[in-house]
Amino acid sequence: MHSAVIIGGGFYGVAIAVYLARQRGLKRILLVEREASLLSRASYNNQARVHNGYHYPRSYTTAYRSRVNLPRFVRDWPAAIKQDFTKLYAIARRNSKVTAKQFERFCREIGARLQPVDRGLRTLFDPRLIEEVFLVDEYAFDTGKLAQWAIDELSAAGVELRLQTRVTEIAQGPEDRLQLVLEPQHGDSERISCRYAFNCTYSGLNQFRGDAPMSRAGLKQEISEMALMQMPAALNGLGITVMDGPFFSMMPFPARGLHTLSHVRYTPHLHWKDEQGLDPYQKLASYQQDSRVDRMVRDAGRYLPAILQAKYVESLFEVKTVLIKNESDDGRPILFEKHAEYPGCYSVLGGKIDNIYDVMERLDLERFAVE
Image (cartoon, rainbow, N blue to C red; front, top):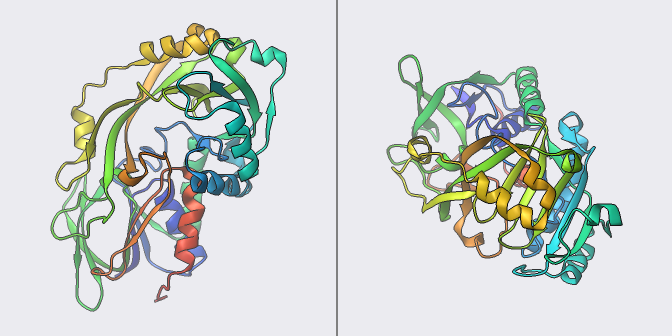
């Protein structure tokens, strides 16, 4: 029997498995991942941004937590952090939910460094559409290096790893044990028992058969497109975000040596309310993934003309999962649910990579039996 089974080999699943082994002393931990490698889905198919709070002027709590967590993340994963680029936040003159003065006041309130840029960088932007441009402290992460960390740490911590395997059912067993059904891509299904199970499947939180515990929170699923671009020389050493509304963001993507380009209007392709039996990954697989990068570039080029010279490489399509209650304020709190009807079963979802510390703080409050 296993002490704990972690379902999902993304960054959160790996970090929780390592935490349980190293900080809480649990033995016989199993990590199950449906893909052929770790950190290969939502942990990879995103903008690779380590937030410092600037992105969330409409959600003070999310912004402040990001500002607090960023230095911790840089300290704990230094080899995966890319800092050698200049990060700019520009405030649009029209259709923005925040003005330059409001943005400055917000940054002071959360303690995030902010300063106006020099004339050379300002000339990259069309002054008719951009009110102000600020230099900020924000970084990117290399998912490839995080994946190597995951492999090394799981091995060192003695965590058993099964790839290309799905957990399809969670049920309550005897003596407060949980019963899980594992279905490998090649081979027969297997039923195992454990004391603790952590559902870290992100978009798949509610996609188990039988009477598995469902998340009590309303979830929204969204097929999103992240365009990978080769930027022209004028933009190559930069990360740029235009705030705050139907605008765009470009960030270095260290795992490929490229930049990502996302647009609030064109990155989301399709969305629906999550429900059991409507598998988000099957929906993604059947979706015709036609890129909207031409519209992203065309609109971004109005604010940042040099981006019109960028070269499109390919797009990363993925299912993005958010809490419905935070759609209006763009907040990204964690979802951490302890299922009372299934003792030992937890559901965990985070909207940003630095939210991992919020998860760890919740886990610190839990009691785990060491067997």
